[in-house]
Image 1: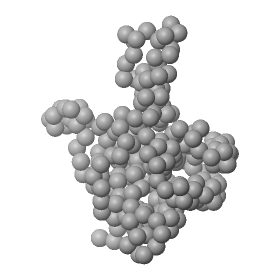
Image 2: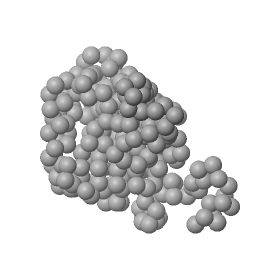
Image 3: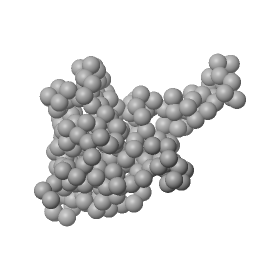
Length: 248
């Protein structure tokens, strides 16, 4: 076997893959480097996986870049991460591959220059339809769901929404992610076995794939391996295997 890509069924590519890019700091520490060097190395992986996902035909790739909890990290690391976003979030990556850029998260907490860079990139790529890369930055599910509940509560208070009419679809339609489908596959690198407050509502029925590889070493072949693993699973959504087979 030359590559897991050869084993992938191109008719069953997930529309949306979400990734927790974990292990940058530990990758750097294992090499005697400062943690920020791991984040720098991780940028190259973002570019590599974005291009691989585009070639496979995904519609959406969502990358957990910076959580609301990450604001509690040492100031020098936070500043370095913000600097990386400004210097490495290159428009060329998106224009070359005809990929749209979008972001989710608590936008107002970001430095003004980062906000401006992201708004500019969203605007310049808004007409690209080949794939959408979504950066989750200053994001957490608990923040997102709390924000959504406050919005719906205010609408109910103002008489614009009947609480009895609130459904799962109502909530989904008011989340940051309302513009895209829920992820079929969630990948986490770095060896940890948790979701870390990431897309908790959206990942209710996502397939989960954990690997020990640190993000800077998560190359194209590792990504294909995760997609192939996903394709070996039976997605039942609470039904029995027999029901799934009969409904095909």
